[in-house]
Amino acid sequence: MTDIQLIIDLHRLSERQGPGSPADTLRALTFMDLPTDRPLKVADIGCGTGGQTMVLARQIHGHLTAVDLFPEFLEELDNRSRAAGWQDRISTLRCSMDDLPFPEQSFDILWSEGAIYNMGFEHGVRAWKDFLKTGGYLAVSEATWITPDRPKEIERFWMNEYPEIDMAAARIRILEDHGFSLTGYFQLDPASWIDHYYQPLEAGFASFLERQGHSEAARRVVDEYQAEIDLYQKYQDYYSYGFYIARKCR
Ligand code: SAH
Image (cartoon, rainbow, N blue to C red; front, side, top):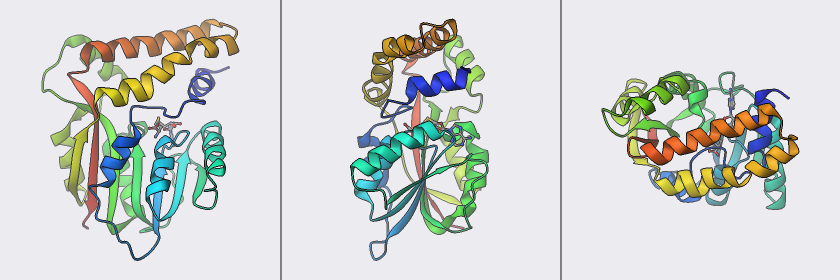
């Protein structure tokens, strides 16, 4: 098994593949003034197994296209949406986020929780903007520094993981430079990291190792996630995910 296959196996049975909670998804929605006279079209990019997709489907009258690179995650989302009787309202699409097949101006909302880092924030905003109708909304959560200075250990970790991490003001500037107007911003609180992501992930370590016959590669994957969790416990005052909600003006 490759490392990617191991990571998919570790995450496949979780509700979330990154920090975030139903309350965060609902809060982000409150910053949108949405039309109520017609069904909306929404894309959820980097949806994973669809934790936030299911919350959106409950709230929004319209159709959701949930996109991810990995069919194993989309299969879980298909199972969930079938179980809820929403198979006509949620379509899944296996596609890379940097090669989306959508026509221009096709969506009222582009949603992406904890996934745009795969392209980089600015690249993602630039590439996705065309798919959004003028007046439509972008809602993105993304790793964000809380303080201008921070300890070397956590700086080094993020420079290695995702050097594009920045403070909120820099992200908002990028949105404004690309024709968006910010309508809302908030930071995810520790419960969204711990209760909704890290705890369920840790609870799955033992069964994952069992499935993988305690292979060296599987143990390495668990050790890396454990180190990431330990760093979060130690340095959570210095970074979080910021949730950015912005309206496309031009
Ligand atoms: N939105 C979910 C998943 C976040 S994890 C949640 O918050 O729980 C990031 C997701 O991006 C994963 O599901 C991963 O499979 C997906 N991903 C990674 N690279 C991608 C790419 N190039 N195109 C589309 N999705 C990608």
